[in-house]
Image (cartoon, rainbow, N blue to C red; front, side, top):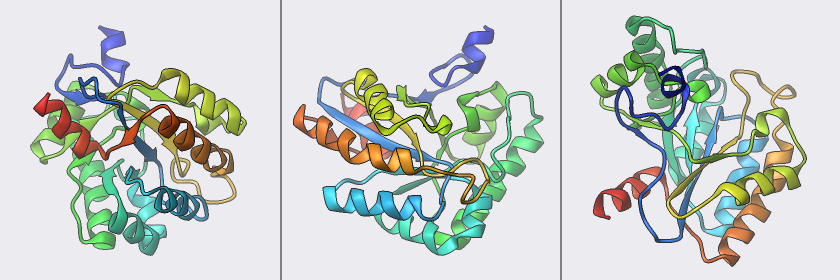
Length: 223
């Protein structure tokens, strides 16, 4: 039960979307912890050049620091809530969870004019109260099927290898464009940025297309 509590794929306490059941070769690129200059802008340039829409789970504190950048992301991509200060919520009271989600919603709405429909808990640890509160606020919880552990800043080729090794049809990848609520230079995401172009090229060469999380959810339901 402890494993089920702490895994981003667990349905023990409620639904967490982490992949689409489909044979279609599609994948969702997701990025956590932004917005963060200059890495978010660099990722936007790559995604625009490749004609890909991704999903960015933004931290409210970071949105307040860079509201214009948050708005730029939302104008091109799907934006989700990643709390206000990126805390561990696993053992938190429901009121604390609700406060974190609502403050994140408020920050993102003030910057973008959009209320996120998606929520990803920091560190991927969904307790029952987290899923319940998110549902009460009209948000769907999102996990992932493959991650690169890029918060430790491994070399770009290692990030690429981890994603490509674990990805499959309907998969949800996890990468980072920021680091908790730490601004540059602490949030060095240059290795992630360097890896993304090659990840996209390799996936395209293997016949993959790209979807946002809501598009992947729709595919999952249709299938």
